[in-house]
Amino acid sequence: MRLVLASQSPSRLMILRNAGVEPLQHPAHVDEDAIITSLGDASPATTVTTLARAKADAVAAKYPGDIVVGCDSMLLLGGTLQGKPHTVEETIRRWKAQRGRTAELVTGHAIGFNGTWVVDTVSTRIRFGDVSDADIEAYAHSGEPLECAGAFTLEALGGWFIDSIEGDQTSVIGLSLPLLRRALYSFGVNASDLWG
Image 1 (cartoon, helix red, strand yellow):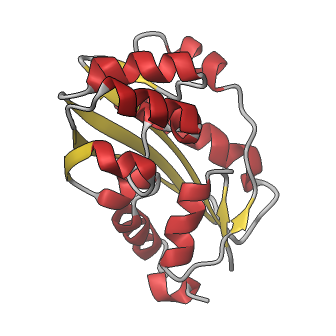
Image 2 (image 1 turned 45 degrees about the vertical axis):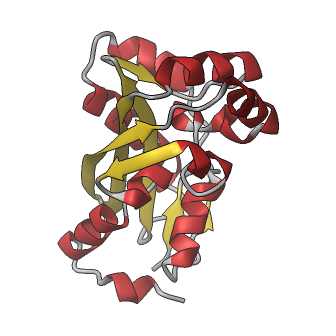
């Protein structure tokens, strides 16, 4: 039995490795924009769990008997969900809008084993620092936040600019270990069964 991570995220991979698990990484290639468009005015939780499940479903059939994990995170700021900024310009715009504010990072999980699924979200409050324009521009030009939900990382350069979090730190990085543990228990699997 292996844990298959349906993601190319280095942050999710780091979380699992730091927790003693060497997953098989099989990135799922799904059209996230098309899925989001098809959902219309769905709730933030529905949006991220639908994306997480699509990613897990894209690879699950290839790994019968293994645990498959798909995740997706988005930032809920002022009632609007925000995904990855992709460009330096969009990163700068978002940081100028979110600095000094509190937002909610919503991470959807789809965890499957032998045809049984646990699909759930973890929400964590993020308080962004009142960051200078110079630091925002330097951070955007570093490239780090371009492919990150909410245009930030907690575990690297972005950590400079996060004043506090309330909730599950691992979910902010991309994968909730407490939620994964509860899912494993529901499958009759111990977390330690996956340790290398």
